[in-house]
Length: 348
Image 1 (cartoon, rainbow, N blue to C red):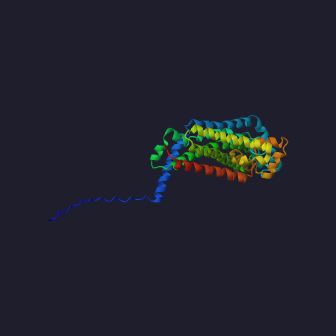
Image 2 (tube, helix red, strand yellow):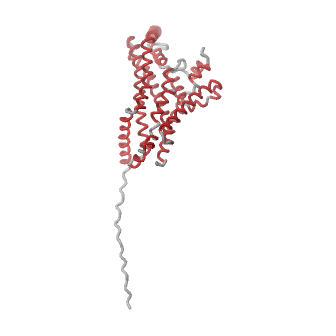
Image 3 (tube, helix red, strand yellow):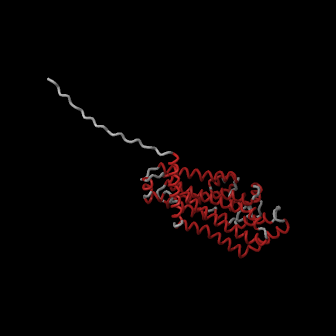
């Protein structure tokens, strides 16, 4: 008896076409173009925000006060100083017109160890820090709070892209605003003092660096405050909480670094290395005045007002090279940390 053989039907599964990987150069180009579009959208949306308007007002208001006071009361004094220096020492010599004009600009901006520091204490102090914290506290936390971060992630876009494009948009707009404020004051001073004396071109050529340094250092300070707030924003879910924590931290290190230094001196002043304001002011005081660091430090403690009072206003002075290294390190480390936390954290 013959056994019937069972026929086994085999299904032929069609081979899936192999996925063609996108060349790395094209992938990088697409990421850059996508980031550029996101960046530009953030720039266009930023100036409509209420916190950016508040930031702009806080930047412009002191500038208007400085120019108003200068035009009403200080112009004759500063003009006579530069004119006398031009008559006695010429244009380029030590204590000449150009050097005096540079010192006048530093004095007007409150920069240097011999100045009270209204502009410095404002632009690299708590007022601008607080508004910057409010402006950047929602870079990540607001997207998570509104539930829009998962929508971004569902699209072919990296979370790091979102963080960096938002931060770079803030950096771009804050740079334009900072430059507009400081250049306005500088050029008003130059055209009102140097132009009547016939040395405008020489003065601009040899003193524009002072305005540039002030813009760059103040801008880096603003970015450092923004990066610290952005790091906190990547950890918490509510932008308001991120802003409050950031302001409390900045206020604590700002005040404690000065109070501890006043009572304990350099032995208790290590907190200044965590204070962006003290770091930025230490760089400004030396780089604008262009005087020796230790000579300027001696001028504080030998001043008639007393070393303790001067230290309370200016905080413990740090070597400007060390201060610049620490400030930029804080900026870079906090940006990288915020990107890593946002990239790895589960989006609920």
